[in-house]
Image (cartoon, rainbow, N blue to C red; front, side, top):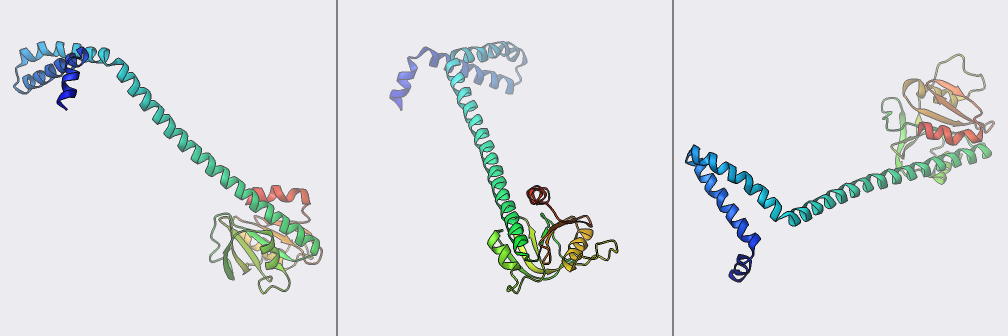
Length: 238
């Protein structure tokens, strides 16, 4: 340690730094002793001392500021990258889920498998939906098809999709009492309209008789949805 001190002692910049530091200590003591006249004189030297330190240690100060700036930018860059990656991951997962539901609807439509799927986004339908079997399962085409398979004990009711999961199946929904619904609208269609009258959700229906795909939103039923529209509608209400 003493050897390092001896080496630095011969450095002009180091000696000036020690001199300025000593001046600051004396200035501080004078301030504490309330020697106003001497303090006013030393104020001028202290101001000059700050400038001297900046000039002498300009390269070191510059390197420190560059280092600080690079680290700040790196942290911000990492933060932004994490946000972008997370959003991209969520977007890709949502796209996969939409494709799975669309494929399931189309396949059930071709097979004339009756189905009722409610998209509840992040809403809780507690108090509006009766019975049902909790699943909390990943959304997939095979699972949706197996639920509505006529041999499945869960086929007679609605599937609730919320928070990116199949929350429950075989759910009983409130039935709409509207008199202006088509006479051909069965219990699934009336249940779909009924739940959308009471909550801000969308319901997709596959008719067991015709295979047509319909959608109910805000208490309004729209029948015979074209295949090309399904993806857009799912994206809007997913």
